[in-house]
Length: 239
Image (cartoon, rainbow, N blue to C red; front, top):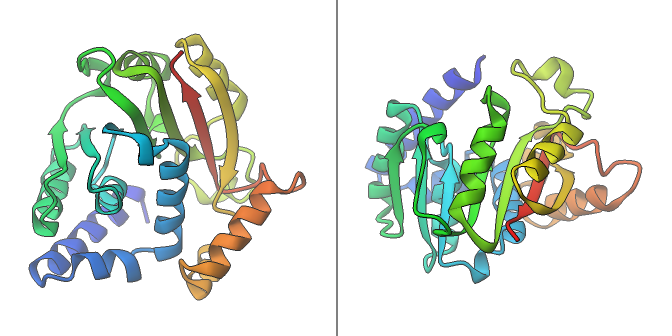
């Protein structure tokens, strides 16, 4: 099943949950809860959302991550850009259904994206950069949009995770290449780590709470396993 097909199925289910007034419950209990919660944890921690005022989500898809972050951080204003019009429409519907007033979403191309310089305290981008033919240009746009001291947190499939070689149908990003591109765009303090070590079947049994989070953090801190997570997390800062 392709990512796009899976996303469209999620949109349909989320739309139904919105109509029934059960969106938040559905997001937390049925939408790959451990993987979703784990991603929110990683993004919020590294983007320092507790200190942020305005944050951009580049390539928000149908809104899974930006919606979750906005629910968790009601005092932060989130702005998103997404290329696919059907995803933008779906995400706006979910935002309205959840009654969120701290999210603004627009349709657009990241290559043409030019917000005012230094607008954002942080920029997040989850599973987007590996789709782009011209990552250096996209990274340069993000760099310009961050304030000095602002952070970029980008998550992509990890090329160093062997199961991803057969499980992922799109291109995998070489961590060293991605780090080099970020530095070339002007970022400093560039760091890489991996995340989501647990297979979904195991994670779903442990659920999003205690055990799953503890195991993920332990595996992420051990030298033999720290680079083998399914996802690669880039953290970079504008000086």
